[in-house]
Length: 111
Image (cartoon, rainbow, N blue to C red; front, side, top):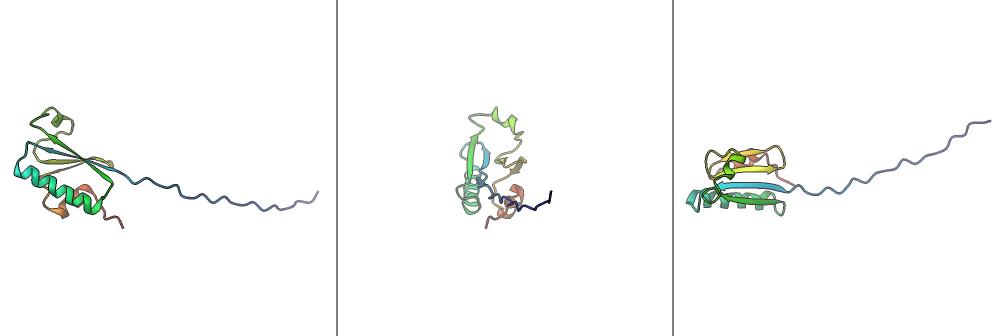
C-alpha cells in the first residue's frame, strides 16, 4: 500500500488578551501632616503619569488604625508599600524624589 502524505494545518493561536496589571499601593501616614499630604500628592502625580487607570491607592492613617502597621512592618511614616504586582516593595519618605520613587517601585514607563 503506498504511503501518501497529507498536509496538516498548524493552528495559529491568537495571543490571549492580557488584562493590564492593577497596581495596589498602600500609603501609611499619621494624620494630615504636611509631609503626609505631600507624599500622597507626589504619589498621585506619579501614578497618573505612569499608571493611568491601572492603580489603587489605599491610604492608611496609623493614628486611627495603629495595629495595621504590623502587617507591613511599618517603622517610619509616611511609608509606601507596593502590594501588587509582586514582589512587595517599600519606600519611606515624602516621595518627592520621582527618580528614586520610579526605581523603588520598579516602574517602567509604559509605551
